[in-house]
Length: 186
Image (cartoon, rainbow, N blue to C red; front, top):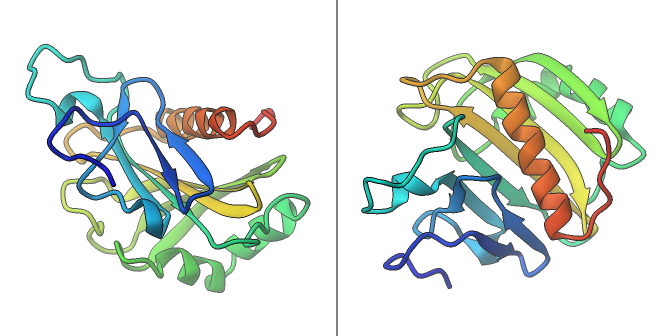
């Protein structure tokens, strides 16, 4: 159980399987995060403290991490097929089938070893008020589970595609390190 009354935690263990930490300047939101359900929201630590002197990271976004069920890993060794599926109408429908958000258009997919990144744009208003319609999502396997990471900038300080992707890559690197997973060129 997370403690919402103290300083924001730097890490959390999701679904009793995957350790989650954010990149420099990001902490786990103790109110929204649901460790047993495999979901974490990470935001700028400075946004969750009462200390006005806390510094914000250079790139401000909301980062989500979702951990799948036991044996849900499907990316490693299947990166090209997974990427091709994301480029189909069925893949776009799957990307939009979430608790937050509506239909999306897939703008770009990229693959790396054990990683498929998808850049999307919401067809309507973003599912989270105050966020920009564009987002990066990364699919990877960690500890035998499919892990989905998303990075979405704020509408008043929108992130470029490249800055958002850099934050996504930094989050992936921290997750891999926190779980003893091999680093790749992703």
